[in-house]
Image 1 (cartoon, rainbow, N blue to C red):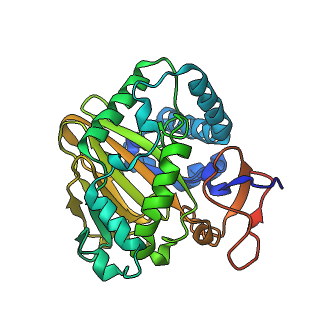
Image 2 (image 1 turned 90 degrees about the horizontal axis):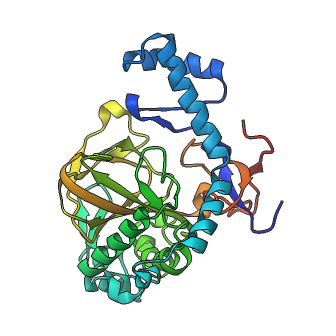
Amino acid sequence: MTAGAAYSCACFYTDNIYLEEHRLHVRFTEEQQFCRDYQAALQSRGCHGADQFSHVLEKVKKEVQRRMTLAEESMKRKAEISLNYKPFRPEVYVLQECFLTEEFLEAVRFCKSPNASLEGLLKHLHSIPGKRIYCFPVFVPQFCKDFVEELENFEKSDLETGRPNTMNNYGILLNELGLDESFITPLREKYLCPLASVLYPDWGGGRLDSHKAFVVQYSVDKDLDLSCHYDNAEITLNISLGKEFTDGNLYFSDMREVPSNERRYMEVEHTMGHGILHRGQHVHGALPITSGERWNLIIWMRASSIRNKLCPMCNREPQLVETMGQGDGFTMIKEDGGETVDVCTLI
């Protein structure tokens, strides 16, 4: 295998395909399996008749094909953007401490101190009781304003960027825009890892070695909300960038292993510049906004030492597929010195 190669689990190409119209996540390996597993469920959600079912099946097949070429297409888009796009706010492409609030910096300094402890850190953060969800200001208002202006300027260009995931229709992959190396990576390594090492040592908080970062957009004429889901991440940071909007709070229930009929939901208000930090496997969603427009920066942070043992999406030992670009945070070498399984065929 290639040295320094990137990997995804084979389930990426078959599992967790979201059908927005029917609010259903499905798995597809072949037509017979799909019909057997989902025909009744789709009928109960309004998919009636052979024509409608055939239409859904074609959408699923198209999504599988998109995923199989995703890494290659993403690299092409990144190269095209680098060659042809002139940033409106070039200063936001390089992380600077003046972008960050003093409250956030103070919390990070505490985590790096010899006296760092969970009890002490909680004095610097707002904690949701019993949920291990933490809220704190991350970015100053001026940075949020400048960053959104840059994103809006890019949207006015004719250049394309990839869809962030199957659930969000509007957004931007930040690695394609050239923000990974100079902004997101130092933010993760220098600031977020110290926080996560104290808050989530059992979820690889001190060993976060990769990420996927993207921005999603909500407005009354685009995506209004986000259905209940969990993330392909060990730890997620969700930062509200503004602009002006009403409603649209996040909601959280329990971890994914809790049966759906036993989950209890609670809302968490999301205000501009503030981040909400949580475990990726914590089931959550976003309520509809009722006016205005909201941009959110999402960082899925990953620890290969955790996911090499168990894929967070299929809950099985990962079946690795080598891919171009960043992959999904898996490596060939396990923490115990063994190797994960590499498969040659995808489906």
